[in-house]
Length: 181
Image (cartoon, rainbow, N blue to C red; front, side):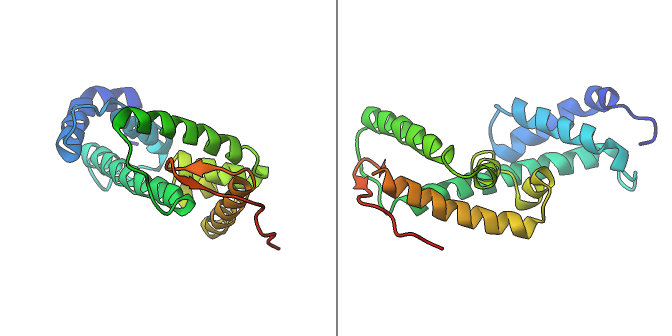
């Protein structure tokens, strides 16, 4: 890329990226997003075609990171909603304790999944990677990642039902799950 090093780009544009992210997200806590922006830029520095200015390239990366982050938050909420149909309204302290217990139960159940399913759930549901990003990591097509993700959620639900997993403080799966082929 035209002789730029990632260090030079960081020195020249870090403040611009930080400002952009603060305005775009409405939060002053953007250090992780700035770091992610420059990490992605570092990984893709050799692919930069210079048909845009480095600053606009970096802002595009930052923008995509924020958009992906918000999409992934929604996706993680969907995973939790798949496992529960309703939430119990408890006061804040009780709810926090229950959420921590639920997350521990959920993580333990995830680690009982077959390796391929576990990887996809971790990459897509927890790390909030896109199907494309996850497919690059697990070395398969994005379509296969989506299929594996769907199947892994189904299997995860079965494991949770079998173990009598509770969610939302009032939902309890009982009995053994139906066997699926």
